[in-house]
View 1 (cartoon, rainbow, N blue to C red):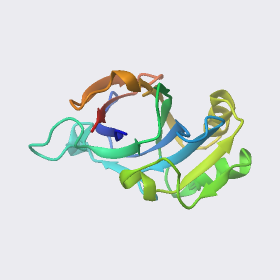
View 2 (cartoon, rainbow, N blue to C red):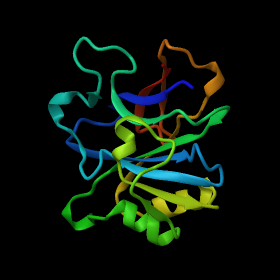
View 3 (cartoon, one colour):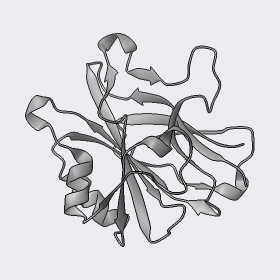
View 4 (cartoon, one colour):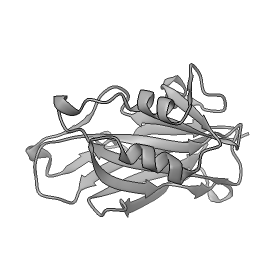
Length: 189
């Protein structure tokens, strides 16, 4: 069975230059249990730090690297067919708005902390995940919208796994609010 990996290659903020403290909330269908969704924050316990010097662009691909060499978001050997993945991009609002995002999701959606996420491989396997059973994306989105940090929108990174190859498939799209553009890669190895 092949390994399927999703990496984030680049974020570009389509707004005026300023300092940004960004994080993402990744929601993916559980590759071993289609009745639940797995949720994690990226980066875990930290923020993606933009300064005015970055020209509102942050690349996760190392100098001289290729598509697919970026930040490891998700990996699996268990999935087939279509895999639904959504990313919510948020700007942390400062110390007065600290929120433990995964705890809020777990509490509000009756989720369960996972010490390991079955079916997930690579660096993402050691991340903190919350499993949420029987909730639609709309219900999860409402909880995420209650987090007091500024939303830069949502982006669908879903893919048809049968169309992947060992050559990275790179995609780029704007978030639902048009405030940012993300570039990501799916690769099968």
